Image (cartoon, rainbow, N blue to C red):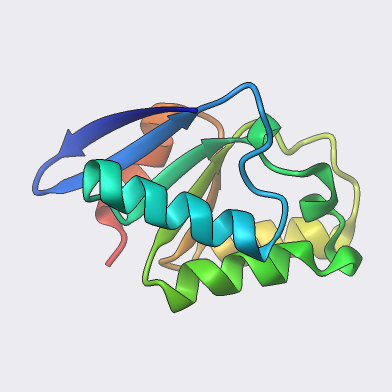
Length: 122
């Protein structure tokens, strides 16, 4: 797991790099949040899509809700970086749309967009 701290204005974002799955369940979310906070002091985290368990994107699995609830509980914000156009599930598309209009979770196409969205989030 690699962590790069990126600063924009007065906010900082931890941009993750990994060849392994970082987010697969509630405990992995807590572990990631706490590791990033300890190593960088950041509560805004950007993760590449391949580092997220694929079942996260199947909403009926419940994994997305479990993981995102941990981010909310620990006052952390998350951006997942990748291409989401291949998903055909209407509930998932609606979830991505609603998330991107919120302040805590974002689904973005680039690292730059992740840093911008996370630093602008209240």
